[in-house]
Length: 306
Image (cartoon, rainbow, N blue to C red; front, side, top):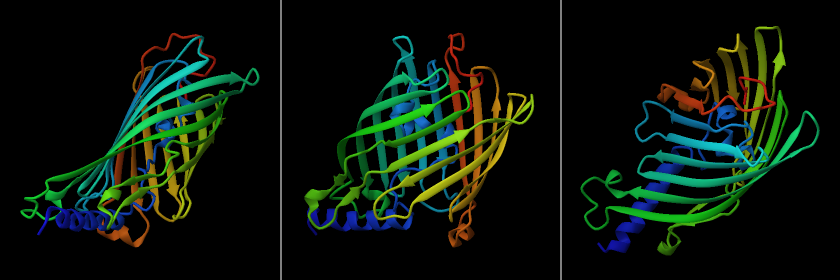
């Protein structure tokens, strides 16, 4: 069998497996999106008024062989009188034999609309790398081709409106349609633009308790609109407890703890409410957010809720 025939055979198997794992919407999903905004909206960069680093790990559908696993890293900071933001976002997403890594550089410029509200516009340039490990498809049958690699550039845009206790954003972090393995002619993989809307508000219920409802809506051509709704309570500026619901997909429990003024840790557990939930033990997500300096003359409350 020729190398090209092997390639076609393995690609068809890889794409069939990815589809069976639920990659209809292709981009990674997050339960704690309110702490990971820089990955999906370049306009968020620098909005905290200080340098910040966020790392997140998600293990989806634990117990299913080849289930998706995602890691994100996002660094952003403000400069030039805090009117400008710069960020770097890295997303590593793997499922079965396929692994996609995206690296984006974000730039944001902010306008003070009033004493309370700021509007930030962001753009990003990114590069995405896709690898298919043939040895994971048919062990022992990959003598002619060990792995298949492709890459594509992309651009993104975003707008982020926020005040001390309200935020709303619209974004498309990957505006261009990317086609992988098109040279094979028999099969190809199209990664479509995704559009996001995110928002939330913070209510002071008492001197020691705050309530923050939030939402994330994701749309992509050819797939149903995905909506996440969440509700978190913050106690004594330290402990966060909450729940979330992914429309017709999963229910979640969330927890977080402000270890120091600089360091926040969070955890979320998702339980699939579809029939697929019977064959997996749920999804786990953990994140760390570190602020490098809290001594800036920021007008945003401390700690920030988004």
